[in-house]
Image 1 (cartoon, rainbow, N blue to C red):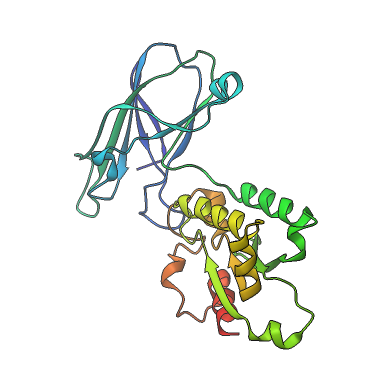
Image 2 (cartoon, rainbow, N blue to C red):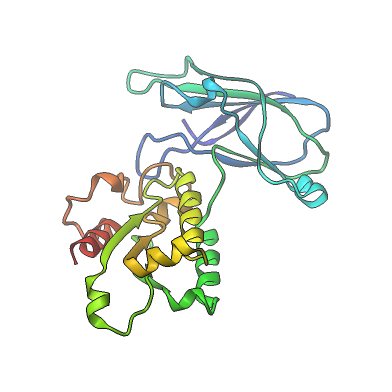
Length: 269
């Protein structure tokens, strides 16, 4: 199947997701734009090449939608929407792949709007860079949080590592601290992990008594986005190697899986 949108009627569209690059699978993440809509008309969208046999969409989950006009006029951001939501096995499969469909209907709130649908709340590589720049430029946080580059990805993107701990003038005290290592976003389509990491960093870099105690007690090494290439190209699970990095921690192929190789080296220190 080729990625694209097939108009099945005036207000009905079949959508085909691109597989992860250099694979023939992992169709789960979607994030697409809609324009030129009419107001108070029911549209139907159906993604027809999903591969998981079960889904939370059959248990009450809904697609996310962002309206540019709602954001400008009402300060409303991403929200769960849709009616007649169903996830089911379809007839588009073959001997190698069985496909499933996700379908929903929606009436757009405005004409001449630009809207987006997504599987989960987006968190991009640019979002991460903006966040880290704010931390690095904050005179208070930058005293106990250092932002560095752990390595470069296959595509040459920076994989960041944060070192968070209270500064100490005594080398013995600093050396005695136990290390806590956290990573996120090894699977690019799991954007919720980036939001959880952001919440953790907001807490750890905050002014609370608990945050100060954690920084005084431990040395934190944090890799907030292990797979920036996958995030940038819109993959769901893999890096540009076409492999799931979460399954490559035993690999010694430094040039093929640099984020995993350097993270493992970080853990061994």
